[in-house]
Image (cartoon, rainbow, N blue to C red; front, side, top):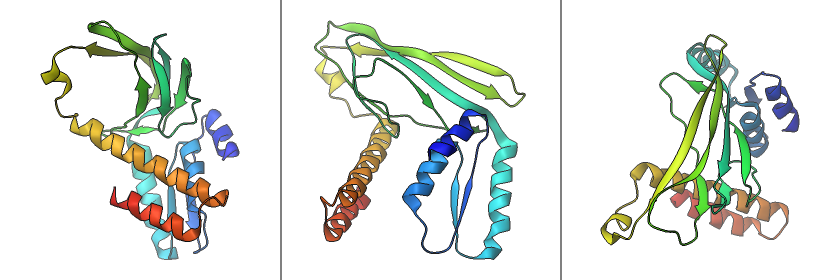
Length: 205
């Protein structure tokens, strides 16, 4: 996994092809994530050309590469977690290496932030920049600001959560649950039967 990340730092995106029934999906997923690419399980050799077609089509439509999101939180904001990234809780400043983005595709990042009681009004909770290399090879940067409104209007803060945020949060919760289950198995704090039961609950979520 570390080697895959080192290669990515040199500007090389890697995709991994997995053969045979006894493969380690957790390892391959971690490698692909660090390398900014994908991974595929190939049960039959005749599927290989289709995988290459898929990858080449993505390569030809990549619109942003080497994405890096750098953020700095306001001094009164506390980070609980950045889902899918190993950012220590309570970090004030951090940078995230993101996967390449294809034309027309979207990407979501989920941050769990904690806010103390705060005066009413609009306040900047975080700021930073998103840098990337475009299709022509030029490096670009876009400033990003996260502004939140603190309100005393109960009708507004009791409104339903944005469906996109709710869906991303559910995926985030499921991802964390799977990680905890795998760690429980590794440390032998969970039996195989217990792990299967946990994964079934996560699958339902």
